[in-house]
Length: 132
Image (cartoon, rainbow, N blue to C red; front, side, top):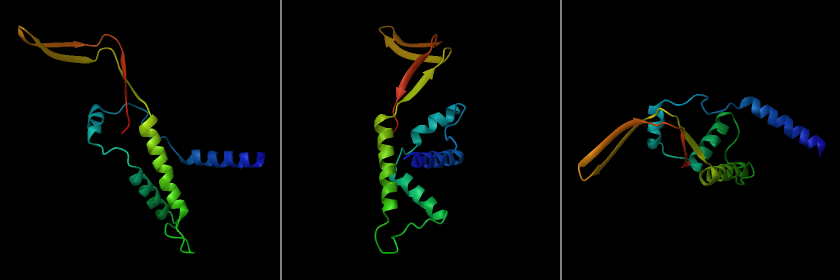
């Protein structure tokens, strides 16, 4: 059991050495954030297809097994990605923060006609979003 755990830790260390965080370490520019509405959203099938394509690119066989049986690894890859994407969509929480000094424009109306107000936030505000 101890030897197995050591091997698992070794493999995890090697994998961590190859992986780099995909999140930017600085805020995205406002136009990039605003363009998020044009993104298609997460697709488990698209992600699994890309993983399988990359496996093929590095020489891992992706067709049926030599015996003619289905390639269970590819099926498992698709299931794995589907479960991860479902968990992200169902359970992930996105947090936002709005700093003080952010410009605010408000519109409304009353019996006297339309009202437009301009100002800035005076305190921080936060909110939540969802991944889709």
